[in-house]
Length: 338
Image (cartoon, rainbow, N blue to C red; front, side):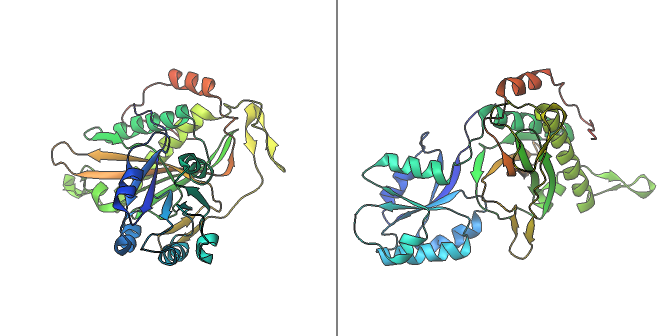
């Protein structure tokens, strides 16, 4: 099982390619997946990457501080959710935009200042290893039950601050436990996954190709199964310290917390934009389904967005591990209704 801590994909905007490559090197302390980008390729990079956690911007990107300031303003307009962390190499005066737009700065002469900036603005929400591994484990089991003929793997989990929708199909279901409150989101591209669905029996016992309705049904069932597994494993598993309800909340049996505050979701179809009403980072895990016969691949992008409540201290790792050990293995065709 992949037990790596979540990483975050960030754009590296540096005129010096050697410096960009150095920042892009795997670094357990940084936990970054760096993507070096030239200035003339920035628009294409923003179009290609929908799951970014931030931007590292050099104060001289583009050849001068003024050029870097123009990039910062463009990023503020195009993707305001992404925190920009500015690299400083001098103590000189900066253009107004470089003082206003970046969330933080770090000094190249003090590498620890980069760690501090990333912890504060990219990795601001700590997801325990048992939680991340547990989510992947229960999801992999349900995927293998629904797609028994396919190979199923998962990418290293990541922290995402983008709000860009992936693909054409998504499902949402609310999640509430004693220590978290938010949403489970599953999204995918329509055609690749439809191509992997088995044919179905049509009129006169003829086989018919699957269509978008079959895909909707499978993705909805997967979401329901993962939600049910999450609920069974984590509902009520909270330490008393730090897991209390907020103002206006009511605590029910078993530590269940019913919060009165709701935040509307906002979906802009034209911009492929989905907002959960908070700045909380999203925990993202990508699952890759591969057909061993054809080599075709489909990706299911899973997000956990704890936008309405989160208590890292309230998550009881011991209880969660015990619940996981007691769970039966999921089988093909299982159905969980709640």
